[in-house]
Structure formats: structure tokens, C-alpha cells
Amino acid sequence: MNVDLFKGEQFSSEKLAHLNLLFWCLLWAVHTNPLDRFLKGILLNDLMSPGGGDPGWSLDLILDRKLADFPIEWDACVRRSAQPEAGCYEAWANSEFSEILPETAYYTVEEVRHYIRVALSNIAQQKPESAEEALATIARFGL
Image (cartoon, rainbow, N blue to C red):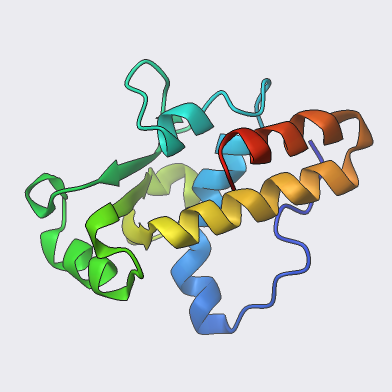
């Protein structure tokens, strides 16, 4: 799929560095058929649906700091969140493939939902044959 997933978004270099790992995970999450293959596991925490895959990436909602690989970083994410009770997403990618370090970062629920919506909206605009599915996915997940 040749789509600029984050077209229209403006980022400072600091913000882009913060979002780099999330964007890597979302690139793999939405470049699937069907589009919601990974989104059910990511957004609904559906244990029967994957929230990650090859080549070594995952995006998991962590509701309790005890379950976070890096509790101090998870705490910082929760403090940034408008909905701290919602937890934070733990993004991970194997740096041998992504070339992103560190391999783990934390994102607020708001950030993850926003950028999934942006990616799906850009798919709808740039790939007319996928527009109906992308817009239906946005609606289904309330993005």
C-alpha cells in the first residue's frame, strides 16, 4: 500500500522523535487486509486478535504499571494523559528491523486513537478502493 499515512500532520523534530516508534507500529497495523485485523487487538484489547506481528512489533494497552516493561516511563505517559485511568499503550519494535531505539515507548490512549484515525483517513483519501472500509473502520471503533 503506497499511502502517506500521516499526511497533513505537522511535527516538531522533538514530537516526531517521540512518535517514531508509534508510527512504525501503526504502519504495520493498518497495512493489512482487512484493515481492522490488528486494530481489534489494539483498540478493543481483544485477546483473540493480534496486537502485533512480524517483523517484530506490538502495541498493547497497559492498564497497570506493574504490567509495564518500564514502569517509570509508563507513569510519565499516564501523567501526560487527559484520561490517566485509561492507561497507556506500550509500543515495541525489534530494532533490528525498525532501526528505532529505544525499542519500547509509551503513548497515551488519545495519541494512539488520533493517529490511527489520521492513518485510516489518509487511506480513505489516497486509496479510493479502500475508502469505504477505512471510513467504516473509523466509525466502528469510534475514532
